[in-house]
Length: 165
Image (cartoon, rainbow, N blue to C red; front, side):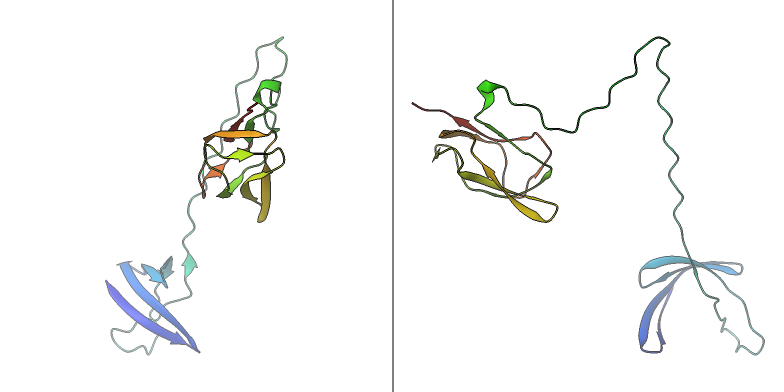
């Protein structure tokens, strides 16, 4: 509808009147929505309507989640899921897993590269800290499952190393 630029002190506000219904209006102030009450003051010039302080538009709260159904009588209580990464079987030592959730900062190897146990093969950012991800065995990189910028969860496969004789 109408757009205004208001200056109060040294602050500038961009105000857009979206709709007016009776003595209430919906406005945007610097892009934020508000519902305001309009009140005419005595002595106001025709066509000029002072506006009281706006009240922010508050989105409705989401409905609470329903409680899970009760367990059948006599059934043992269910166990909570573990947050620990999956254990690696002895044959899976060449599978390099994400030890924590985070963002892949860099993958330092490609398929066909030879690595030694302890070599840094990738860098992972978690909680604003850079973490070196190291090879658990010596061998050749046979699969790279992630790229720079990927988001990973605990236990996600980052890459696979195959032992060579």
